[in-house]
Image (cartoon, rainbow, N blue to C red; front, side, top):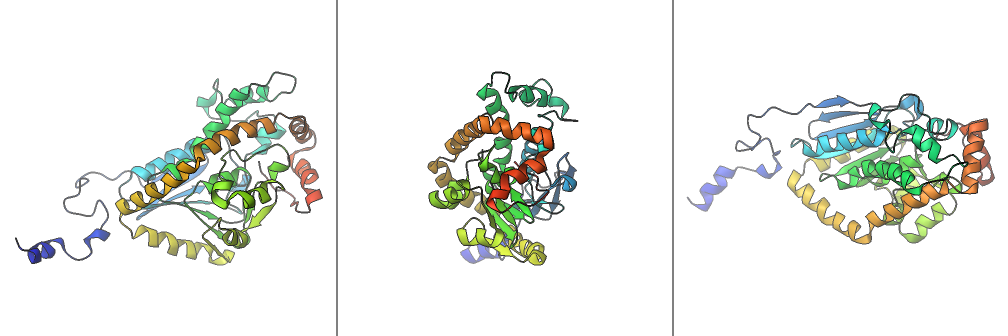
Length: 339
């Protein structure tokens, strides 16, 4: 067979075919996995070559619950294993991306969840167990705390550890634990007025993901965490935290253009590029940063100041306690939900 015949057999630009679209595909004749699924805290939908994972607790600001890391990791793996998916897009329904941990559970009610997942009962993520471990009248076991928080980190880190590219679309707010999730994504695109940061460094929190220095560098990460200040979406692009920022009414359309460009690429090329670039992140010590930051996050909630903050929230409510925390910094917004 001549070189010309080989070229004729291959056809034009076949490298842009999906894994499942070639006639000799290993998936030929195999049924497709389900293209949609609902979870307690989010939804999953495959739309062509794009997997869409959407936080779905809009009335609670998409606040994080013990279900969130499990739901997110399961949905990311579903997309990662589906040969039709080229890129994973994470976003949030309602007024914002994610406002952090559900403090009505973690602070106001002392970890007493109203309807936690059955599989959590009697484990280290049992809210009653964690509530007892946060009682200042008892001895605190830091490894019970670490076992709980490291589980959240592992679920959120699935965005970074997935073989395929992950994109976080931020609008409204991505604060506290919500920023932990976003910083694990490979790419961040946001609205100009998005609020991104970790105000709980002012009291009762250290970002357990440990990603700020890896995304922003040492000085800029310290600039935010030494004050608890937040960036706007436009500032996030200037600082190198996000790759694109757009007016809020353009964000959806611009994000679609962006993920569609990624989705045109062959899956294996995307995987190799991500794995090669992630090797640099791992060499920087992202795993160690997460471990150390998770330990310090636990400590921050068991200092005298941390106990005072939690007890104040249980007495007057979390919103009022956050107002008292943030008013001296001049950036309090009533009703913000975070940790």
